[in-house]
Image (cartoon, rainbow over all chains, first blue to last red; front, side):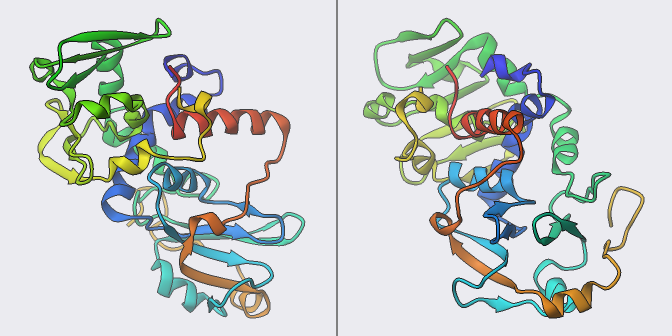
Length: 242
Length: 61
């Protein structure tokens, strides 16, 4: 992932930095803006990045604005007022010509930014909130991922790029994961990277008891997140998990 | 209030008439596995998007 931080396509590098903003927001509030799905060509736009994060968080269901042949019973949108009842008025709407004329609705209620193309500019909001950097990325690159667990200390070098340290003294670090059960060490805990938010002081998983402790963040910002869902995504192939 | 130049919704002219004719539906809780697989525009974008999917859904060690 370090190599993708400087990926030649800046969108990818920025995503490595800012995806945590979406992950935290959707962990706390769910998906505020419905996905726009054009059923004629099976396309999701705008909303593809929230769609990806919804899979990362393993949401069961998400709100959807569906256009095209009706598949199931839904709420029919007949007028602008119907859109406002769903989104409020902080929206941008455009009709885009593809193989069909597609409706594209962006809600700005989460970021309060609109990009020059009229889409939600959450990346700008994220970069501003994060101070244009990902302090935790820098920390784990320099110090490795430290795991506080009741096991004899050990270190794993992951492809000579990342290091993972497990010990009973990991709480001496500014950022570490508290692992209550040594069996959880068999999981690929690096999968939790996009939960690492430099702003949040503590994320606790009510299912596994894993805690993401961030002394560099706001100690009063503490949330519960089902990290078990991220750690158990059966559709991912093994090479993608590694 | 937007933080850019506009503090009102941005709506194309004639949208109400268009909405009255087109099949648009709101589903407040569509199961994620019912959302169709995605199709992309060009090969370069597909490659980049696959990388994006990988880095968001997992971590490259």
